[in-house]
Image (spheres, rainbow, N blue to C red):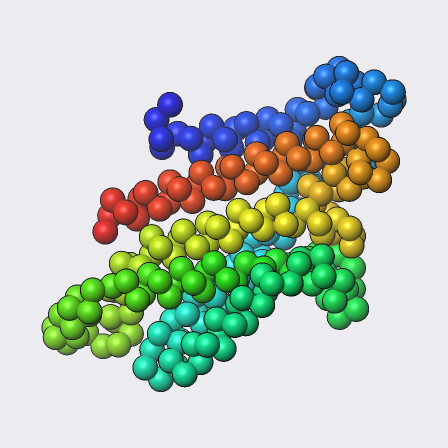
Length: 241
């Protein structure tokens, strides 16, 4: 299969699973023979998928804005003194387990999607900050000197030279952050967020392996689909630079 069609293949498989898992009731009865209800039905898989995507997507956007912005700021001469602080804050976000962040954020934000997004933002910062710094630092200084030599301002150099050249490395960090958080977001179901973790948590509580498998299949397919889309995007940037 051609590399460019892989994202479409995984997307079609994900949508087919979200809309058609209930058609596999016989298979799940074989997996869980002693249980009458083997298809999770409290919410539709498609609505859980959309909720999961929205939570991860909003958290990813905030992480990208904060992470890329902070990395750009500390790579400028006026912001280099803050580099250790930014690196430590980003590292702390991944040092704390997401469950601990959720537990600490519930008193502040209540139950539901908001504390889940807060945890994902903290958890997703480190790879974005690190890769943005690595991408900006990896640019040949002579290229930057040449850009300044033709009269480009600092903002023009950043937008037209530095970011395009560093974009592939930055995208790799965003790809890592988002892919990890797709799986991490499932724990938001423990505090009332509606995610693909709902059938997993319900299955664990009720000893229903079929429910766990349904949630795990959809989370896995979503992660592979998004990862494939990022790979396609990275390849496009690599061929255009």
